[in-house]
Image 1: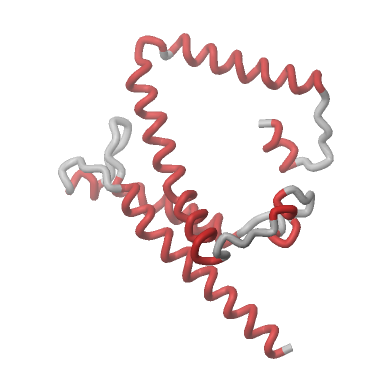
Image 2: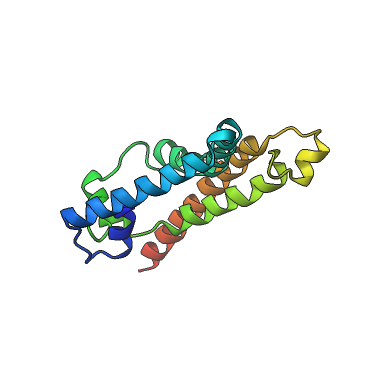
Length: 159
């Protein structure tokens, strides 16, 4: 939470006291949630893991395509720690858009206790959302980045 706060508010300088207060608040919230959900731990934990699956599959697809097929493992590591984002800038709009596309395309294929999409229902309740997420996001991200790279090369050639 502190890292997120400092990302959104770069001038925020966190003190030791603020760290203790934030960590204590998160601990108390987690403690309350665990006390309230103790009787239903396994179903809640299963729902949490399913939610993580739906959120992490498109993120993983974007990262793997970027690492292996776009940059071939060649990253400028100091830029990861630069306040201005270094050579990568603050945000990769293409990656974020593809990530959101990945989440959206999974929704009809989700088969969970809390929600079953229409296509998952048509498949007899089989959850193939993660397969769809990978299968859609991977080529969409790859071709989106490649098309932007070609456009950038074309602009440089004209200049």
